Length: 147
Image 1 (tube, rainbow, N blue to C red):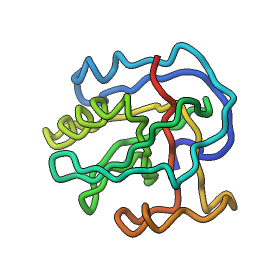
Image 2 (tube, rainbow, N blue to C red):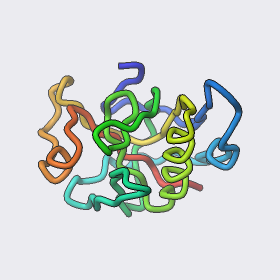
Image 3 (spheres, rainbow, N blue to C red):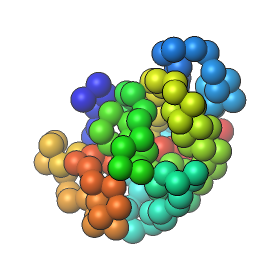
């Protein structure tokens, strides 16, 4: 994987468009403060559909501040970043929507997302079937709330 999933800590956010500098609003999202609250429990995850693409959201007020990144892509009607399913904070659903529109427009997008995650490859707890039944994955990443 291009990024790491797990309980690693950092505090930056820099999504980048590798083909063009599109989605300026998406690129403008930044995180101003770090939090030490642990990764959101998967039971608080709500599936959504944006333009026919499945995404997930959470509403927890805190979050980890590790950094995860990779190429965003749509596979099997699900949004993935470097093979991980992203659980977007509810305040960032507009950014997920912009990301989907850019990918559907033919752009290859590299993103960096602050938060925390679970990876079966790193020996973490199982990923709930409420996520994997819709979007098969071995890793999930919870984004931290925006500023």
